[in-house]
Length: 155
Image (cartoon, rainbow, N blue to C red; front, side, top):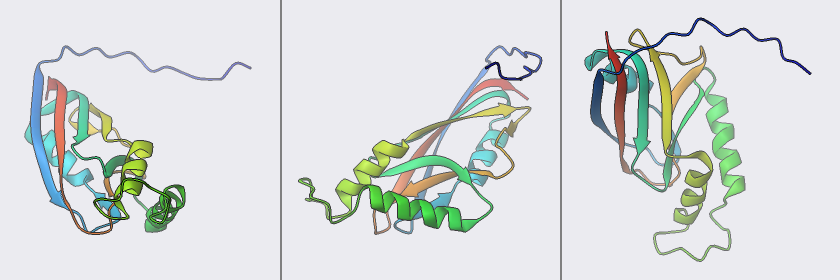
């Protein structure tokens, strides 16, 4: 079956800007932390035009995701689903850092540590109900670092 689709006009941009920064934050333990405003601030401060925002989390028991930002019940249900996929009381061999560590590694493997978001005229091209989140998979608070890079044109 053929899908009805329409491709917009193609815009080309020669990359002229590579900007980088590190975002450091404390999590509250197992939860979603919205970092969308920090990502927007970085894009604005570096003078980004058209290009890509790249995000990379330097940890193995937390992750990054783009998820709904309107109803907090979505985050509650996602935490519940991840707990079911990798329960703390599983038969894990790696337990030296506590019963939540190996499940945290599994959840990170499932959800990932990198994101890329298109930027157009200095604006993140997220959907209406989308936000960028750092997802903490450990039960206690942790300091986490997210590397932000913009590659593209200047405004």
